[in-house]
Image (cartoon, rainbow over all chains, first blue to last red):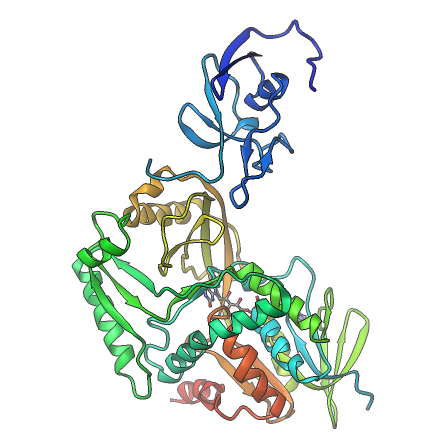
Length: 98
Length: 371
Ligand SMILES: Cc1cc2nc3c(=O)[nH]c(=O)nc-3n(C[C@H](O)[C@H](O)[C@H](O)COP(=O)(O)OP(=O)(O)OC[C@H]3O[C@@H](n4cnc5c(N)ncnc54)[C@H](O)[C@@H]3O)c2cc1C
């Protein structure tokens, strides 16, 4: 669905989403890298488990929540992509004390 | 004199909306006037407790009123939900105030006993719960918690939805909610009141001043006095997390939607409503002592609201002697008292006398001031 404007910029970074290997570019936000990698559903909602993906891409809507390296409820649009990130979808509400 | 409405209620916060909702029940023509979106509104900022345990310490009529409202809350919620389809998220499992030292616990014990011992106060179902029992009910309580005070009548709700439902229910009962209508002047005539605001004039048989802190300015127009002070309170809410806490605490609760609310500071700061980091940080630190697992939780929002405080902290309900038919209604606990406001108080106003609410007139404050 999304295409990069220019392939030239930025070093290639590898990461995983839900176990699948993906590649992004240095300077991508995690949300941008996931979208560019073809991921549409980032999380499911607290009350009804409905699918959600990024909407505002500027830290406001909380629809791009994912788990990053074991930390739940992180806003993918606010986090720069790093080499080797282990990312999983945020399913419903986070469980404290796990 | 032309008469547009039987009753005009000024202020569509929880107090005005509950009274207007109750008044509209019996086929009266009622309007509810409110300001625009930027108004000061305790009703949009509060902690959403229906709270009994130590209310009315030093003033038994308030303990009795609070107990009555909390007892009516569940049937009130059912009625509102059935009419409006809005889920109020009301739960009344009893509530706790945690103590972090033996001294705090002793203080809680004393205050529970003193409230209960006051003349006329019904059995509040309150008691001290020691750590072992508390841990069996709330295993997530932190190691520093030595015990808690408990009251079976305490509960909580979703207060933004309560306000929404009262507005909606009021409309469904035939009432007119008029927003962006800041009331500027009120003139008492021979058989009613003329109310002017935003270039529009309304005539009503009775008027209820429920404008929160706005009553300070409005009350003298009908021969009443509203000696109110703002008292700032800051609140925090965390990200939504899976349910782990099934009882409300006086300063911490998990909402029906999963967020954990942490309240509420008490700061005498005039009309300032800014959110201040050191205060919020202290609240968060104490919350982590109560529930260590909260150390992991992200805070998503903090905000401040202004409590509407009478000089002694108890409600003020009074009919003007100079302009009968004008009523003043102010209180600090508009969520807790919503059931009594929509029921008993609306009926009393509809009848035209506040029999049964005599203890809440401003007379007590004038007596105190004269002494
Ligand atoms: C931090 C905090 C925590 C709280 N926690 C709890 C709790 O847990 N449980 C509980 O029971 N209570 C709680 N309260 C108290 C509760 O929120 C208030 O008692 C209640 O909201 C008061 O409602 P109100 O309608 O009197 O005032 P407000 O909500 O302030 O509403 C007054 C309304 O009058 C309108 N108005 C003012 N002037 C005019 C005018 N001239 N013309 C037209 N309209 C006008 C305003 O626009 C406003 O909408 C809390 C309050 C705060 C601040």
